[in-house]
Image 1 (cartoon, rainbow, N blue to C red):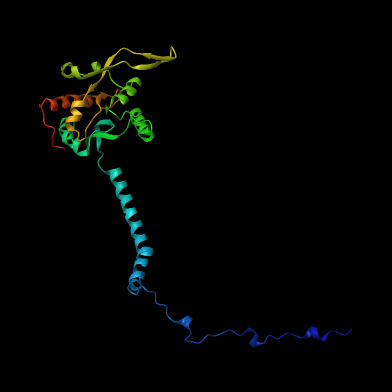
Image 2 (cartoon, one colour; image 1 turned 90 degrees about the horizontal axis):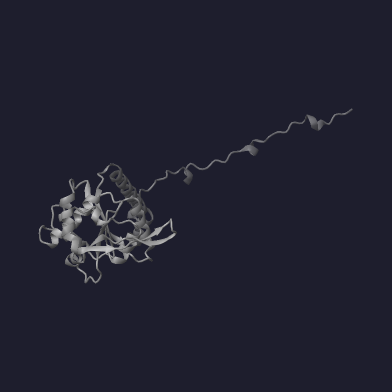
Length: 267
């Protein structure tokens, strides 16, 4: 049987079929690429281009760097820095004082209660309002009260009644020294708390007691405003620094009677 001669043929691969493309030696692909520095790029731009380049590249990097450094410094100070602890914290409602007003009387009280000014301080927090629409202030006050952070209240009657009814305020007969009680006796504010009684499932009126000191004369003396409201000072039952809260009552009386100076070493 004849065999197909084509089966014996071998296919030849022509050299030209597998020929590689060779570029000239001076082709642009072989030329050395020179990377321009940021400074060179910046210099080559006009004023408008330089401003745009600064915003797009330099400013973003700068802001990120500043933010990182600020976070690191804050973290370092928070973790390793000295902790300034309150030795007295008063919540001030419907604030009648400017910062300058408080500076007039705050320093002398600091002298009385601070042992180390680098680690201790007294606070008069004026971020509170008895307006029910101030929900943020109410939440903050409730949280601080529950956490035993607040030692005393400076407030108008509307807020005082609310906190007395909540049983958050000391009967001053229980905590004032006898001599101090006599000094403020004519300024004491007696109230009848309206307290919910779970046994009777209703609100009952409790016996009258002195829950606050009227400090309207003190406020008017140190306030820059034309104060029309009366203000009252009370001591919070679960406050951490009850003794210092009581000392502030004595301090106010000494100021009003001219027995001490309001300017202290830590003012």
